[in-house]
Image 1 (spheres, one colour):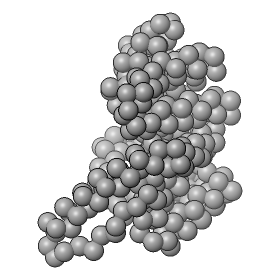
Image 2 (tube, rainbow, N blue to C red; image 1 turned 135 degrees about the vertical axis):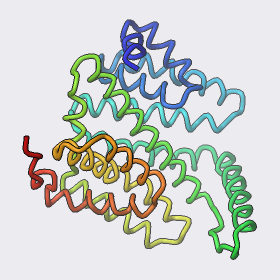
Image 3 (cartoon, rainbow, N blue to C red; image 1 turned 30 degrees about the horizontal axis):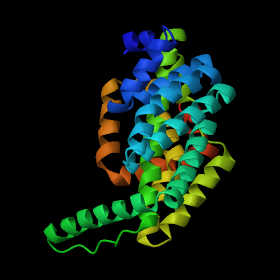
Image 4 (spheres, one colour; image 1 turned 180 degrees about the vertical axis):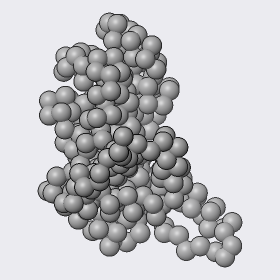
Length: 282
């Protein structure tokens, strides 16, 4: 990974090539955009973003409207990287990602209704197949545009956050060894941001099933704050890496664990849990 990051930062041509080819490799193009923007600033970031967008723009011109998702993702991660560069605040960057991708989903809903209709039909078929095979039969919601756009915003926000993490890690690996871990473990939402996220999540959960998916979007800043808290506690107590492995397995496989992590991160806003935990004695 270090060799790849060094190659990207060797020059504009190398960064552009990786951003272009990275369209077909998950997270590579967004992470490249993030790394260049974080390290070199707006002008170079825009240049690399243009190359990252080129394949999606060509596909859009050929009638493949689903390439709009790649455009939204690349633009949002560029904007979030610029926010992180200027503010050095993961809270601002994550809240920005939520805002950018929510706006992107709304634009898709208005500008590309045919794409949304096709996605609704495809999702309806998947849900119908799942319901038909379930025993006993499941009462699953009938998908609509609200659900599809919520899933779109959730996916682009998550991929953007992971790409931004990867880009920031690359930056630290090259120019500030160990700095990423210290920075990320300190991530804790301030009261206003935490309240906004939690109120949005609760509101979505109180709505019909097709609107509930939007909670997946607004919970992500709290989710990443919870992940940062877990890393901070493991580091402070001197626990082994196996605990982080178990943590991520639970995070991927157990939906209730994600909900618990969001609640803990919300509480950490006021309790400062990591500050109350005593470090392991040497």
